[in-house]
Image 1 (cartoon, one colour):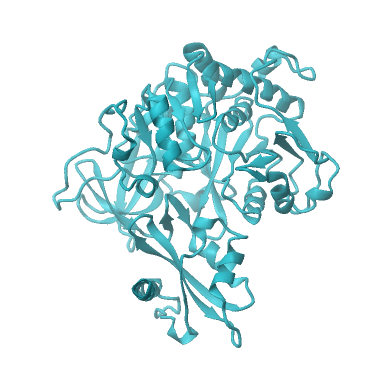
Image 2 (cartoon, rainbow, N blue to C red):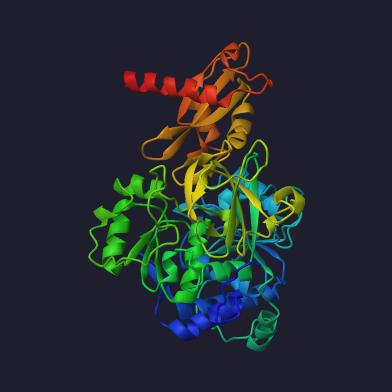
Length: 529
C-alpha cells in the first residue's frame, strides 16, 4: 500500500494558489534584488494571464513552454498555465538555439511563453535562430515544419516582431473580463482540474543525446512539497529561503510550489553571483539557504554558507536522511532526482530496493548494488516513452545510483551510467559527442567525466581527427559553444590517434580507460601551466 501524505486542501494548483492568496496575502512570495511579488499579487497576476490563455484557446493538456529567467514572471507564467490545467514545460535559460528547438520538438509545444530580452540580450533574435521560419512569420497561428504543433509565441516586454504576441505579468485588472472570460468561467475551468491531471514535464539530461521529459501530476507535486511531507525541503518550513537553483530545475520548481503551501519567501537571483547573493540574503534576512553542494562550493568555497555572514540563519528540523555512519564508517546521503520530484532517501512514502546490476537479484542490507525506488511522487513516466520501457512490472524505477542500505538510511557510492554531474547539472556524453562528431575535422570523439575539486566533475573529451585533418581545439570548442550549453563543453581535450583508443572485448570503447588517459593528460597540462 503506497503511503500518501494527506493535505488539508485539494492538491491542485488552482486550489493552492487561491489558498495562498487568502492565507498569506501581502507577505513576500518571490524576492529578487530589484523586484518582488506577494502571494496575493501572484494570484491576481496569474488569474489575469490565465484568462488571456483561455481566451486564446489554451486549456487542459495544452503544451505550454516556459522560457523565462528565475523570478516573479516565471512563477506567474507557471501558475497561470497550471491553474487552467495546461501541461507546463519549463525550459532552461542556458539552452542554445538548437537545444531549445529540440526540447520544443520533443515536447510538442503549442504555445511558448518567453521574453523579448533575457539576461541583457536580445532574446527575440535568439528565438528566430531557434525556430526555423519564425523571422519571416507575420503572426499566429504559426506553421513550422520542424515544430508542427507550435501555434504562437508570447513575449514579455516590448517587441516589434510581427510574430510575437505581447503579454504582461501584473496584478492590475485581475477581476476584468478578457474576451468573454470572466472570473466565473475561470473558476469553472479550475474546478475541472484534478490531482490526477498532468502538471509539468521537466526536461533533464538522459543517457542519450536527447533530453528526457519527466512527467509529474498536480497531486504528486503538491503533496511532495507540502509542509506535511517529510521531504526535507526548506520551503516546507515558514521562513525566508535563499534559493540557488533556477526555477526550471526540479529544485527551483519545488521551492516555488512549496512556498505556495507554507508561506515561505523564496529569495532568488536571475543569475548566480556570490556578492549579489550575500547582499540579498543580508538585506532580506534569509533564514536558510538551498542549493546543491557543487554550486555552493563554487560560489563560497564551502557548502556550509559560512561566508554568507548571516545572523538570521536558523536551524531546520531534522532531515529524513540525517543519521550516523554505517557499519563501514560512511555517512548517509540525501539522494533525489527529477524523476522522484526531489529527495527520496529516507522520505516517507518511498520503497527502495538494492538490485545486483548483473543478475537482477535483490541484495540484502549492506550489499552494494543499484537503487530501485517507487513511491507516491515517482513520475508518471517519461514523455513519449511507453511505461514498460521506464518501470519494472511492479512499479519500481531503476535510478542508476549505486550504494547500499543500512537501518533505513541510504549510502551512496556513485553512478551506474556514464552521466556527468558538473556544477550541479547533468551532462549526457552522447549529446556532447554528437556535436563534436558533426565537425568535418573530427572522425570520432569520446566524452567522459573527470573528478574535479570544485565542480564535482568536469567534461573531458578524447578526439580522433579525420584523416588528413588537424584540429584547432580552441576554434572547435568555440563552435561547440554555439550548439550546446557552456557547462557541457569539454574543458579537457586530448587529440589522439585512433589506434590509441582502448576498446573492450565487446568492441565498445573502454570509457574507464579513456577517463584514466584523459586524467593523465590533464595532469600533464597542469604541470606545464
